[in-house]
Image (tube, one colour):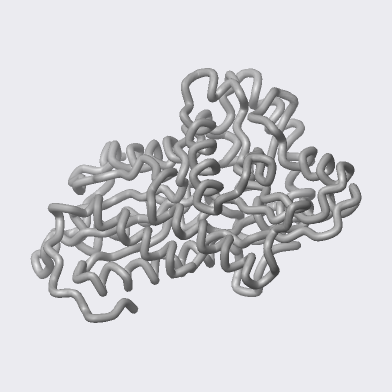
Amino acid sequence: MPRFAPEPPVRTDVASAAAVVLINLGTPESPTAPAVRRYLKEFLSDPRVVEIPKLLWWPILNGVILNRRPKQSAAKYAAVWQPEGSPLRLHSARQAKLLQGFLGARGYPVTVVCAMRYGQPALGRVLDGLKAEGVGRVLLLPMYPQYAASTTATALDAACHWLLKTRRQPEIRTVRDFHDHPGYLAALEQAVRKHWQQNGPLGDDGRLLISFHGLPKRSVDLGDPYFDQCQTTGRLLAERLQLPPQQFLISFQSRFGQAAWLQPYTAPTLRDWGRQGVRRVDALCPGFVADCLETLEEIAIEGRREFLDAGGKTYHYIPALNENEDWLRALADLAEQHLAGWLTAAPRRATPP
């Protein structure tokens, strides 16, 4: 067995092309217990995700979690699954196609594809395909605005593992985070303002809940910048929206296990607000640039139930940026910045796609 994977023939008919790979977390192939079990096994076996010694974690994972959780999670996935497939995969593919159009309109003949850290389309296979097409320069763009070792770092780990097996390596560039990028923040602001135009202003008895995915507190104690970057994103967004401190809150969702995670927790916050007489909540998840299980089921469905059952009156989930034009323009700005020096832009078209 060769140590390095066989190389595709050198493409002499094309120049050394460039590509952008949008990397997201991943999704099961279907909303069924067997598919979810395969996905969870890959996801929860990653030491970047679960920082527990393998001898302690593996009996828990294989003996308890993978026997109980897949059926429960499959039902949640089924509640948000679309006829065409996984929401995350669909939005990711559309974002890649549209970003390629935006960059093309700016004169950059670059290929844009999406890949997943877990599940399909697997990052390694995506990179294999680009290499076979003659791509010699790859910009890896993890779709996580706020850096965390369990998201951004593990995505780049997977790319490095692919490089370790590759004889003829392409040039690689990476994007670390974009939590305070002006275009990203402007897209979030416009999404909220558009929602208020359609549903009325928040009002004095309303609250904006800015919910991020949670992390074990230990990760931050060990030096992960995630918490600080979430606080920065939330604060800058609230400033753009001119919200007073009492009218918004930054919270953290998706707690797993018994260890302390980043606080305040999203679900208890919604219950407390309902009991305290808060009449309206608008919920936003800036850490997710594409809607997925954690936004569509946990926040849009479960969050609504938590708040209304506790006495709240009106609850809105503001969708992720998805194919929002402001967001795609910001994403094109980010990609263009990191592609600098690789490509020379041709004359731009007069109007965007």
